[in-house]
Length: 187
Image 1 (cartoon, one colour):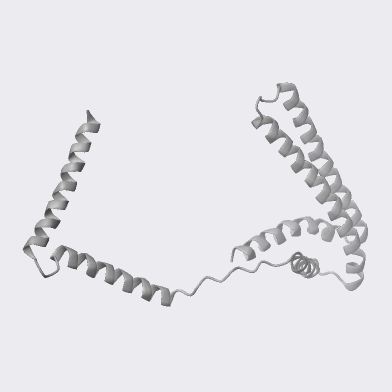
Image 2 (image 1 turned 120 degrees about the vertical axis):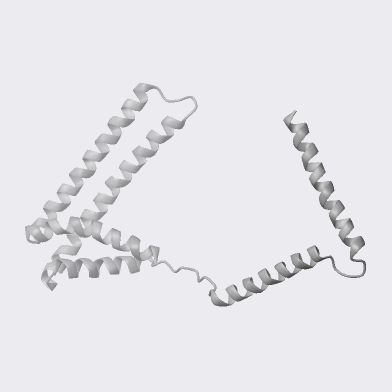
């Protein structure tokens, strides 16, 4: 019933609009209909405003993101400055830091792979059994523990070549640099 009523209303409105247009054409033979003229004037005004706006707003440039090498050189400069590394300290620090970073990265990738396995098992059809989910969760927590162990070993290795405060600061600088990089990329 509602559909029929709404259809009638729409057809009445459309008929009224068509009737008004035809009456406008009858009344203003040889000249433009005032309603049509005002619509054309409005379109011309909007077009003019769009052109003016386009002149004021520069075309957006494609963002150039830094390369991996540029990020790495920024990180080296940032750490060297923040840790106030002497040339001797830097010479000992960077090989140890890079080796630890590779191990931490590999351990973190394993954590992410395990999370992906859990996600796939949860969204699979048919759903994974509780025992499978429990086994995946144990694997996940083992991967997290392994990552923490690798980070601890990296800290101990860095603490052998730098004073303890500087060694501890390397881990806070990781996060500080990551946040700085994200802010830089958003600009």
